Amino acid sequence: QVKLVESGGGLVQAGGSLRLSCVASGRTFNDHGMGWFRQAPGQEREFVAGLTWNGGRTKYAASVEGRSTISRNNCENSVFLQMNSLKPEDTAVYYCAASWASRSEVREVPSEYNYWGQGTQVTVSS
Image 1 (cartoon, rainbow, N blue to C red):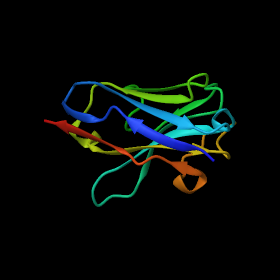
Image 2 (cartoon, rainbow, N blue to C red):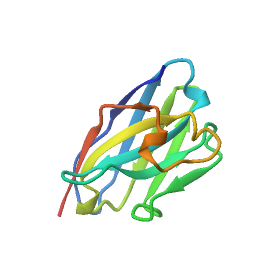
Image 3 (cartoon, rainbow, N blue to C red):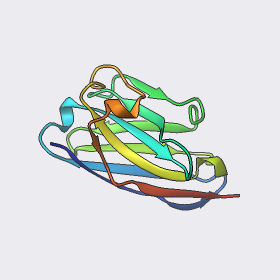
Image 4 (cartoon, rainbow, N blue to C red):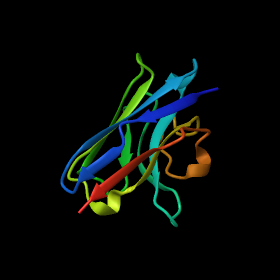
């Protein structure tokens, strides 16, 4: 069992930066790939970024590539998403998720993730 708690969301102006954090509880964190997803009102949940169990492989959505960096610290059971040059279209609830299937190859489909956090709101003003 893995419990995930996100933090770091907030209101930021366009062009600004945010660093989202996700802390996991449970002894199997290091066995899971991790991902960040987001969901805007009226839209489906979409993949933002993911990485494998040791951070050796990462993958980003085209919409955030070059502006975002995902990382993890297995000693602290944490995963992070640094987002720069934020745009109003980045506004959404951001979710942290853990995936057994994604432990060695990053998956982008929400249904392949086993555990989810409650989400943190990111709002980017123009």
